[in-house]
Image 1 (cartoon, one colour):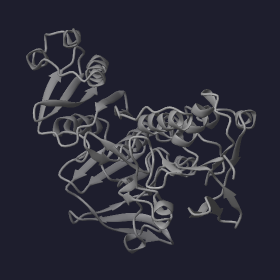
Image 2 (cartoon, helix red, strand yellow; image 1 turned 30 degrees about the horizontal axis):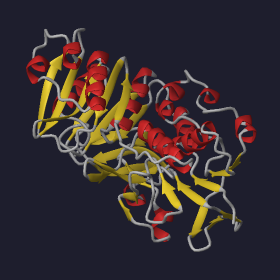
Image 3 (cartoon, one colour; image 1 turned 135 degrees about the vertical axis):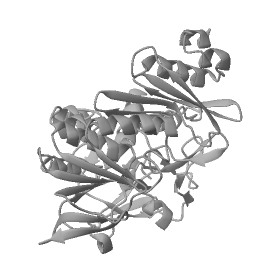
Length: 405
């Protein structure tokens, strides 16, 4: 029986798992199987500096290609895993080849939701943003004076809108909910971000959905919207969320919910299979959640590496996120799920502000907009498990450092 670790997926979690094992001097054979044709790379810059042409792709890769051979990491690119045979501890690839494993790691990530063909989702000029190929195709569309429709007012859509405006593209953004960022941020944070986009010339239509895309000669040329209007456009970016890539887990009868269910040690319902990253549903404060972020993918994968290498420390998520739009940096510490109270605090610099979230009086998270001090303070409080002094927090003249005293 092999002692090989097979990692399915070649993103942030996959690389973090392999690299951490080697850093821990673990010498087991590792095979990494990825669907893309390139070695693992950073995804967040794809929709920002890479799309703007400010960062070459070789700066996005985690390590030079030679690193993998030097560290005995066998990489198999441009291939899919079709099936897991749990009884035989073997995977089968799309070309029919098989690979035995002692431990299997699912780091399959998530896939952007796409528009169905019934509303024009199969027309040329309709894009999602997830992989290098998506960014390369979208970059070819981003030219001054062209017209872009962004569908969805989440972070992906808003970041793409910011890049498009920087390049002189006319942007209309539609959001079916009452406001942008409705699932992930407070109304106060959303209103600040909304105002910034309006100042940069983005046309934002909230409470507005897509009826259908209009095509001409197989390419998108317009859109009929639920507010009764029809607009002309040149291309479309769909940013309506992602779904976890848990097909393999489902088909091999692992426990799944909205993702592959794992425990605090990254273990699935099969003792020989672990999972990490965006595809997982992991324990957090008494419930199972999905944390779609680079930080979670890295931290969870590294925690699993420590366990595989003989450790016994469970993974305790300490979420943080960020989003860059124009000259605005939004930094988020914590996870505001279920908040019932929030406190808005002006920052020391003009244009800086933070929103602090609470549930039943307990501190959950902070959104810091151009306010690094609020972000760092909030993150430290969460890491230490401490509650902020609400009196000091509510006083804009008080120094946030006092919260850590």
